[in-house]
Image 1 (cartoon, rainbow, N blue to C red):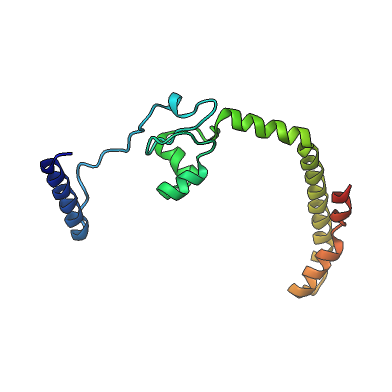
Image 2 (cartoon, rainbow, N blue to C red):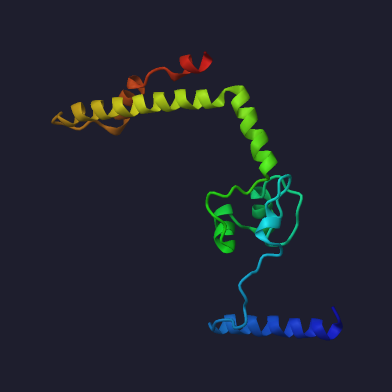
Length: 159
């Protein structure tokens, strides 16, 4: 960048700051355009940031928060990325999926969901019976009653 171009950029920034201070809108702001195409951004072994063009990431979440102060949802919205699109390399996602299957995490998740649904059903049944009572219980007593009604999940987790 030459010194003339630098001076022109500084004057643009100065004018924009003056407009902001006066409460006026800034003119001439372009929508941020991706530095690379979508196809190039989501490769098999790496992900490239559409904001800065930096690549070599397995996943973008940490880079977005540290370098750009963005959350993944805002990033997807800004660049029109589908909510179903993962912000990670395809090979990384596949490796994590395979590792989870090998460890049997899907089975553990299914068991945990069953226990959770049983707890919800128990609360619903217990809530209907306590609603018939004339005098509502104090919050501390209600919390103790809920803890006592919960089945022991720790014993199932050890299996």
